[in-house]
Length: 280
Length: 285
Image (spheres, chains in turn yellow, red):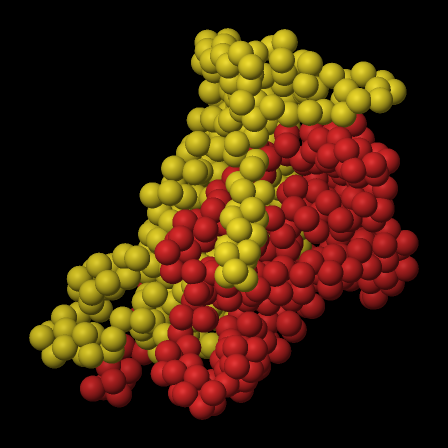
C-alpha cells in the first residue's frame, strides 16, 4: 500500500515537472480567439479573473506555425544564429578540448596539478566574474558585436575538458602499455586508443554542451548589440504577449532541437553527469 | 616502463594541452590578470589607489544586498534540492519497472531552453495568472508573485525544477555503486529498513554527496538566466543577486567597482575549489 502511494506521488511529480512542455504545445495550437480569451485577465487592468488554461484547445489550429514559417524572416535569422553559435562553439571545444583532456588524463608533466586546479576553478566561475576580462580582450581584437565574441571565449570553456578527462581516466592502463610495447607513439595512442575508447565521454560532453549553448543568454546579451546577430534565446522574450500565438510557436520550435538532442543522447547525458561525480 | 616514458618525453602531455591552454590564456587568464591590476587603479586616471576600490565594493549597499541574497539563495535552495532529490532517488532506486521513464521525465527540464519556459513563468506567476487562479479555488487571495518577497520563492522553485533530475541521476549513480551484499548481510542480521538507510546507505553516499554539492552550486549560478528573463535588470529586491549587480555595473561602466568585485569573487571560488580538493584527497585515503 505504502509502495503504491509513493509510486503515485512520483508520477504526480513527474507530471508537474513535464507540464511546461504540454503547456507550450497546447498554447501553440490554440486559435487566436481562444488564446486571447485565456490570457484576457492578464491583459486587462484591474481584472478580477484569473488565467485558466485548457490543455486540449477547443479549436486546434496550425495557423501560427504557418505564420511563423511564412511571415517572420527575423525568426529564421535568429534560428540560424543559434545553430551557428552552438555548432562553432562545440567544434572548437572538440578540437582543443579532447587533446587537452587526454593530456591531463594520461601524462605527467611539470605543473600539471596547478594547471588542472586552474581549469577546475575556471569551470566553476560564473560568467559575470569573467565578463569584464572577456570584454577587455574582445575589444582589443575588435571582436565586440560579432559572433566570434560569443564563440571564442565559450569554445575554450574548461567544462568539457573536465568531463572528457574523467572518461579518459577510466581507460585501463594495461591497454596503453600494450600499445606502447607494440611501438605505438603518442599520437597513435591518442588516435587509436583515446578517441575510440573515450567516445562516450566525448559525446556526453557534446550533449551537455549543446543544451548549454542552445540556451545562451548572458554572453550574447553582453557582447552583441546588433539584434540581427542575436540567438533565439534572446529573441524569444522580446515577443510580447500581444503576439502570444507567435510567442508560443517560437518557444516550441526552440524547444524541439533541444528535446531531440536530449532524447537521442539521454544515456550519454546521464553518463556525462555521472562522470563528473564518480571516481572510477 | 612508465619511468622510461617520463624520461624520454616529459613534455608530451603539455603538447596535448597547449592549444587549449593557449586559448584559455588569451581569453581568460591574461585579461583577468589585467583586471586584477586594474582593481588597484582608479578607473579613469589609472592612478594607484590601493584597496580603495575594494572598500567601495564592500561598503556599497547594493553589493551588501546582493551578497546577502545570493548567500541566502544558496543556503535555502541547495539543501532543499539535495534532500528532495535524495528522497526521490531512494524511492526510484527500488522502482525498477518504470524507474527509467520517471528518471527521464525528471531530467526533461534540463532540455527545456530558458527562453521557452519564460512564457509559462509569466503566465503562471502573474497577479491574474494561473497559480493565483488555482489558489483562488481554495480561497486564498491573490499574491503578486514577482513584485513581493515571494519572488525569492519563485527563484528557488525554478532552480529546483530545473536541477532535480540532474541531482537524481547523480544520487542514483551513488546508490547503485553500493554493493548489494552489504544490504543482504544487514537483512540477514535483521536490520530494519530505516536502520539500513541510516547505517548503510547514507554513509556510503557521503563521498558522492560532496560532488553533488559542488555541481549544485555550479548550477545555482545559472538561475540568473531565469531571473533575468522573467524580471529584467532590476527585479524585486528579494531576488537581486550578485549576477544582477555585476551586470548592472558592467552596463554603467563602473569599472573600478566591477574589477574589485570580480577579483573578490574569483578569490572566493578559488579558495573553495582548493579546500574541496584537499577534502576529496582526504576522503580518498
